[in-house]
Image 1 (tube, rainbow, N blue to C red):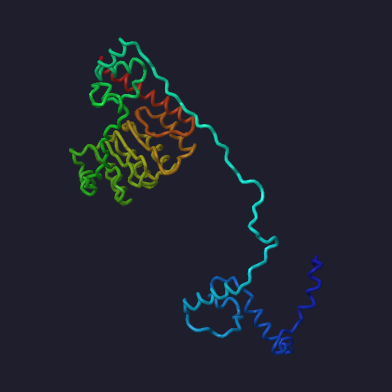
Image 2: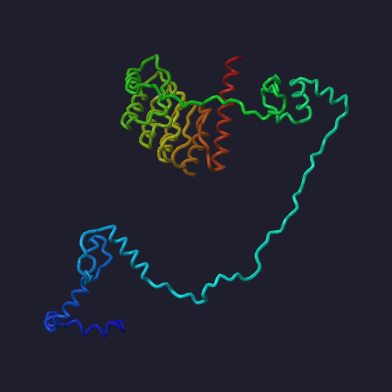
Length: 346
């Protein structure tokens, strides 16, 4: 069904544009040219001089002259007639002038406390240590610094300067990790018996392929018991690679993957590998770039219930259900370790 407004457009289908243009006069052609040039004034791809037609009829005034321009603007401003006020200003003041009220100055009298002559004599002859003990008995020991509380000799002026700041010891930044990445990798590959702990924490420039080589080398290593990989920009492929490590390695006791870019996919790969690993007793995966999600937390809790060797699991659960199940599973594993130790002692 044709719309009503389209019925009037049918008569324009057979129009000959060339015939219409031939009938236009020179003035009409100039007007059409001007209209066509102003069709797209907001086209940012064209320079400003080409977005619309030059409509200035004045001749060029020459190069830029700042002094001449300023003098011209000043002259125009002086010659411009100001607009007449509807109500002319005469300077007459109407109404009453505001006079602030004078408030009486309140004078506060300090209460003078008088003591018994015997008590005043005792306090005047007391030492700083005795005064500190008395302040503690009266419950005002918080006004005394720790140094004054114990020896009472930090201030020679008595209690005129009891609130005295103590010198704070500066806290310096931790030194960079001195671990040699390439040397450590070669020692892991050669199964060096003297290498029992690997610490790569806070080394930001370790390439992803190198981290995968570490995971591959750890599959056959039988001496490293603790591997730390915190804050090394590790991601899901690294977590998957260490999942394969946990399937093969039976000597690793602790694995730290905190403060990295591991998502729920990488954590699920680690969880799936831990179901077949009964050697690892500690794993840390907290403080990742994004939350793991409810599905990953439920799988972690289920794995901990099935695993009897993990006694330390570093992760802050966001859901109450998985948190309770994980806490109960860790408590159960610690009880098993305690029973084995007691039975071994007997």
